[in-house]
Every structure is written in structure tokens, then in C-alpha cells.
Image 1 (cartoon, rainbow, N blue to C red):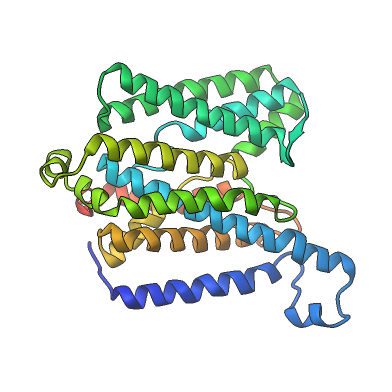
Image 2 (image 1 turned 90 degrees about the vertical axis):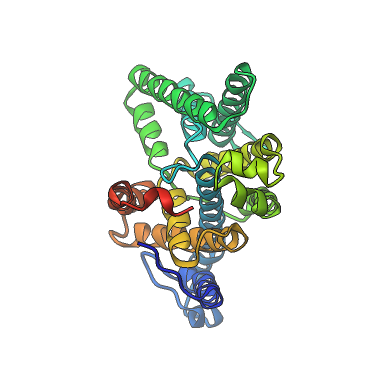
Length: 334
């Protein structure tokens, strides 16, 4: 099934939703606080702190992470010509998860430049995964998509086994902390995380926008891309490192939140087509909006308790994955 709508209309809707997300979501939560309350004496200092130091940064972080995951999924789906590819296909999430698990199990607590130790450990694990996948691919003297995919899948299985082993050696508290981190979460305080993520996501977006022509060519096949004058090895290298670095930063910040990177590109591709000149900004906007609303629903549906956002996105993504898997046209949307 292919449904194409007016691109101008689609971007207009996305823009309105983007602005509504920024304006509305910070005031939604276990207790609703209106803008009027903030302008009057109806709120106390604690409620103002909740809005300006917790909710607004959390919405911004969710939007940055959603944009990064959407871009990562779109790039890998086109680069590997695989509709089931996700930002975590090359083992970045499992590497980050292993780094976080080892940090929690060892029990050392530290921070650097305002960044928590578990985030740094997860980021180091993700970078290790990127280096290993690239190294394994270079051993074959080629940077083919199939070799990269196989290396990423094999590494994911290995890291997942190492995570289970780490949990087995952990006590109850450590095991719970590891499991909770693996469920994903966007708990932030202040704008420090926003300032750390923004340049990384912006850099990844600019690289993908620069390579939109090459992505369009790659989506038709490697031989077709070479015939159109695309330097396939250079494009794959740029995409692999820039997108993987961006996904590593996102995963280290919020944990392995699944399905955002799979659903966002497919929904946008279904609505406005596969031209990456338009698909790239649309996917970034859609991913940002989608994750922000998912996180808001996850923290309000059973308030004052909170559903880990990774569980919430998996509940939505599971049926979508099955539909995509069973769809006859899944491989022809590029």
C-alpha cells in the first residue's frame, strides 16, 4: 500500500504539531499546570521548578532523541536496502547497554563535566561497538552492506549474552538497575543534557542532508549508485560513523528505546514518498514529535507512577513490526 499526500500540506501539519508539542507537553503530567498559573501566584516555587527544570528539558530531550533515532533508522534502511533496519542494527544499543551494565555491576560512582558515569560508560560501550563493527568489516577488505550487517548482528548477540552474564553476577539491586536502564527513560533535570545532545543531533542531520542525493541512489542498489557516479565507499563511511555516533549519544542518554527508528521513516515514506530530500527533515520532525508524545503518555497514564518509555514504544512498535513484516510491499517502499 502506498499513500502519497501533498508534501507542503504534510510539512505544514508537522510544523503545527511540532509547535504544539513544544508549547503543550511541558504543562502535562501527574498534575496539570497551566501557563496562566505560572503568570500568577497560583503556583508555588516547587511547581515552577517542575515546569522549567524538569518538564521543559525532558520534552526537549525527548524531541532530540526522537529526531536522532528517526534519522538513524531512515539512513540504515536506505543504506542497507532493508525495511527492517533500525538505528540499533549495527550493535550500538547492545554495546551501550553492556557498558551501562558493567558500570552498574562494578559499583563505581563518578561523573565528569556534569555527565553521569552510567551515561559515559554507555557511550564508551557504544563507541566500542562502532569500532569493532568497522574493524570486522575492514578485515574483509570491503565495506559492503551485507558484511556490515552481519558484523553488527553478530556483535549484538555477543553483547546481549554478556549483558545476561553481567546480570547473573549482580545482586538484586544491581540487577534491577540494569533492567530499568534497558527499558529506556528520559529522566533529566536542567538543560545540561539538551545542550550536550543538540550539537550532535544537528551534526548528524546536516551530514544526512548533505548525502540525500547519495541516499536516493543507494536505495536503488549499489550498482545503480555506482553507475550514477556515487562514491559508495565514501558515502557508507560518512553515514556509518556520523549516524552511529549520533545514535550512540542518544542511547547513552536515554537507553535503548526501540521502534522509533523503524516506525518514523516508514510512516513518512508512506505519506510523502522515498525522496530523501524531503524524507530526511520529515523523519526528523516526526520522530521528535512521536517520542515526545510517547514519553508524555508514559508518564501520565498511570500517574504518579511512570511507564518506562521503552516499554510504551515497544507496545506500539510490536504490531507495526508485524504489519511491516507481513506487508507484501515492505521491500518496495524505497
